[in-house]
Image (tube, rainbow, N blue to C red; front, side, top):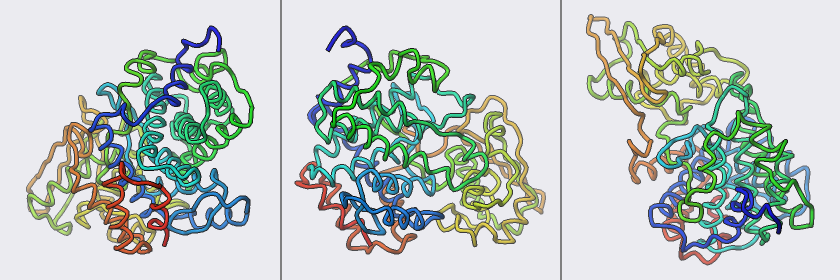
Length: 461
């Protein structure tokens, strides 16, 4: 080592290698456990979504060393490819945990959809125990969350964090489980710098590819760690060098203290558990709509008009665009205020089954959407909203939501997380009730699990 020993990247590399299970408090471990349940439940629910069967077939055709399992569908492929498709399936319904939370501040991001499948995939390869699975996962979550929060996160450059910081998180997980030392881990972070990227355009245009960066980060993180173990070197400072991460992919490091403050003592990760399979930005209007349905027993046939009052930022987001059905209807629906509210008011719920093409093309939903107007609500945040339903009999019914359900300050319960898991299992229809329950039993006692490989058969049809 040299004079760079005290740089943030050196400290992060050292922490990734040196962290032990005993570093974590009970709340951090419980959050990790819940995210494992939630993310893998979302993987099961998303297994048959558009493009996933084709991706699984493509990866099997590639062949290669049979190292790790494609979950739900089965078959073994090289570790990086398995982690890639497992991550893609986790993101498929935009349902997995979100919003890395650092020092009480939420940052838009989807870290768990990459880190959980990467940890499970590499855990299968290296045959670790449950404690080491949790440890590797939290190391990866922490690095991704710190990098994202330190940037201040801005949409203006067009990068999606699923293709940038998630890759650093996956690299940390893979590097730790492959036994890298501190220098090798630093090199792995330098190597992954060559493989990050993404664009919000894949979401803006409503494409199947919106979930791809989630998987590429997993695959490339594993590959970077493998190269570092084989002796490859990378830039000494992947973060602050002349052409490092913060120069190339962000508007600068706005909060550098987030990179190393409480490092090794506080482990940050996604803090929000989503109750609905849609963009987080739509959740406040869904909450408001369902509250009105439940409070007033509204029948959709009796509704004359619906007014959605949301933030200016929300209106300018893809969710604020007038709803249309393109080449990937699921993507159009999951990122739409109008579609999700129509579903909540008409179907009296928002579940995975409502994002099939058949459901999206329901003529009644299509007609109902024309009743929904989107208006600006000044002074509200991105995750707040007001919903006003005007009935044909003249009544105006209003519900205001300051903060959508699922945030740590307005959390859903453990029972809600488990119910969501079972919703995904039922929707998929390929994992038996016994396998799903056996999986939950093992994860609830994950610290005692002797081998992660025991989880894998329970997650294959």
